[in-house]
Length: 196
Image (cartoon, rainbow, N blue to C red; front, side, top):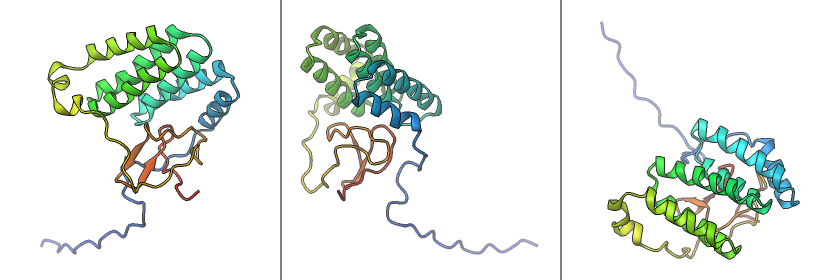
């Protein structure tokens, strides 16, 4: 005799549930890395960012590229441009491997622009050329790749200057949005507090 199945009860979701990430504890090393960077201890900060980025990459955590790029920024501040270049390639290389072309275009453009602003024209050009080599021609010829990133939409909440969870800097150009009203930290993946 076959058992009769009962219909399942619908799951009640609290506001904020159902976002495309799960809540993870914030690593103390990430908080420490941000603190060291802000205090100008770039070599130690770079070491922590890279360690965290490698672990995040192994575990498939979406913030791994940003951690490599933050490590690269710390190395550059410490005068290690070749090592910084390798970390940029590692970070952007993850996006290439994921075929996340939209994010690659956005982050790559910001990275090259940031390097030029810092007077690192030669390094910026090397990264620009490397990026060109990574993107297939069919992607480069698509409208999505050629399109300039849209301006920030009006009506979005005001962002804090730092993440309340990990202490990382919040750059409106770099963060990801879940929908139009939920900003996500680039380093720890927490929902940013917009009620400040």
